[in-house]
Length: 567
Figure (cartoon, rainbow, N blue to C red):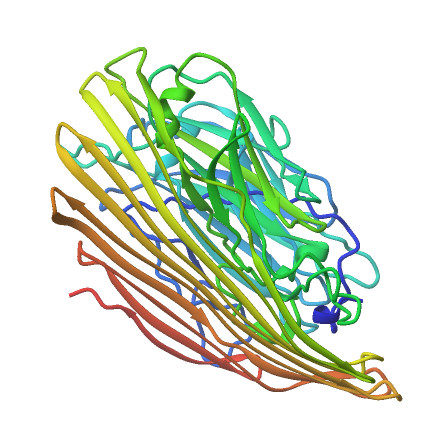
């Protein structure tokens, strides 16, 4: 039984997991919420802004409707572009509605694929014996426009075990909404080509059990690539589900803990050359640690993951040389296991058939985390601290000769990671107190020089996580387990052209749950003092604004404040 999954046994079935795609375009962020938040309801709720829509009436294409998920077989659907609604489109939005029957069930991973490319990656809510939970997700897929221009096969992976013990079926429907351009409107910038890195032609994730395992795909690409991006998902499962709580291998047994330290990071390579880094977000599923923590408010991104985007533009000339190139993703310190997938987005120079250029700088090296432990064994107790720190910075630069002149792109990033753990552990496991303070901060600046001047796209990310787990067990089987979590995600963007600001945005999402599980000697388990809240804030220089807080107590919604704050 997994120590930090005490109330819910560790999964025994390997789940197929994939990559949800969420584009960061001006239309907005991901959206996850029930149709109507109701005070006093135990239904799943989140504080998220809906994906903004153009004013033109959309054309809707149903991908699948009322699929029932009660086994581990993929379900297929056929896609065709909307009739009478030709592209290019002003926006493309994926909507999905999900529900899990009242009863007993694990959280599950949900994925939607189209032509082998992932267009949704998330997990499901867990039910209770008396509450069917439902939720709605929206994702802006406008940048993935090439996927939707021709008929092709789609697939849904949502493996779910149903038997006499785990009784709840999961249900889902999904739709694409295509918004026509308004009269005189120019189409938005979208990728020219979208190429999946997945397990096969219909999709599927690749399992990365150890650091040497790779998600790879070899492509012979167009010869006129001007920009390239890789949207990466690496989702921890099994021993890596709670990777942020793990300890170094030499002390993990004494701490009844997983190994390989509390540091994980995805590494991206092109033909074996380091090309980028994708930090791993510490997603917590609705069955994680204590299922009552997440009723009715799940963790940050839990139901609708966001990918991390790696800018491969400095390699555009290399990728355009007409030769096969292999793109690979691995996870540093993977310890059984990560599910990985990615989508490669290419922007072509349509004014030329062959661009030239070169990669001029690449200072990426392998991470070199520093581990410090100060543990004291004084039987029957082990106490002390374990810290792991990784600070790294790099520059990648390259240029291309295009039909509109020379374009030079320089990507400068600093990624700082800290994981500080404090322990008080009794050697029979009857006392287990662990605190984790973890933060990933990312400072990224992309400078593009061309005939228009100098454009600088700066992004600042922060992924804070505080986790406190305090367990006391008794010889008769009774126990108390107190868990407190503070999980966040922030992103700030500033774009300038020749020194003048052209766009800015600010985004934050914070979830703060607390619960005590009380287990009796006869095996009954009940929550005590459960509370949770989520605060979601977004604003940008176009005037879009959202500020909302939802609060829960005792597993039901007790407050909804705010929402749209547009002037």
